[in-house]
Amino acid sequence: LGGTCGINHNTIGASRNKNAFTKGNVEITIEDSAYSFYSIYAGGYENGVDGNVKVVVNGGDFNGSIFGGSYAGTVTGNTCVEINGGKLCYYKVNICSSGSSVAGTKNVFGGGAKGSIVKGTSTIRLNGGSVYGNIFADEFEGTSTVKGTSKVIATNGTIKADQADIDLSAGGTVSIGVSSVIRKLTGGGKLVLAPCAKLTVGTVSGVSEVSINGKPLPVAYISAANVDTSA
Image (tube, rainbow, N blue to C red; front, side, top):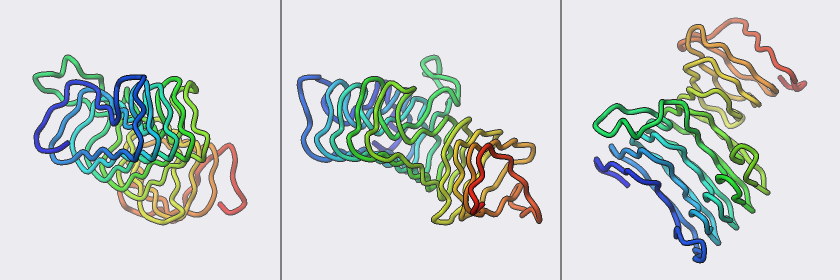
């Protein structure tokens, strides 16, 4: 999906028919100035995929949620959502804005929606772009299942969300534009906060450089419910 296209329906990576099961890997790539008002279900709708599923976002604006898994089916392999650019869960005012949701009310899920199953692993890679909603490596509101490991690997980009797991063990920089709740922060890179942005972390491990607007702090304190001995 690219160019200046506008998508006014859900994007489904496999068949919509619940009696049809797609065999093979599925990949959806979004780039340029594409805009979607609705959600992406890369792993199909009421059916599923016998293989791996990947969503690559290089550009564009997305008002809906992005699911690496299916709406209500099964993905037998692994799912991956790779974000390299664009604005996700973002409200864009234009001629069709009446069909849009306010920025931040939609989210990015590595797994699927209600009743869905991912039998393999679920990964979200944030390499660039801006996410205005929450980032969940695993399931949707506890109604879907990811049987393998779930992980968010954020090396670059901006998170303007309420909740996320951030893994900086591979290095890189993550910028947080608003007050955020991070369930788990694994150090190793740089964490850049906007002025007056309140950061609450559930579990902290490793070491990260913390800065405000790119200016490193000589001493920084992060309060957390659980602190690993390596922090």
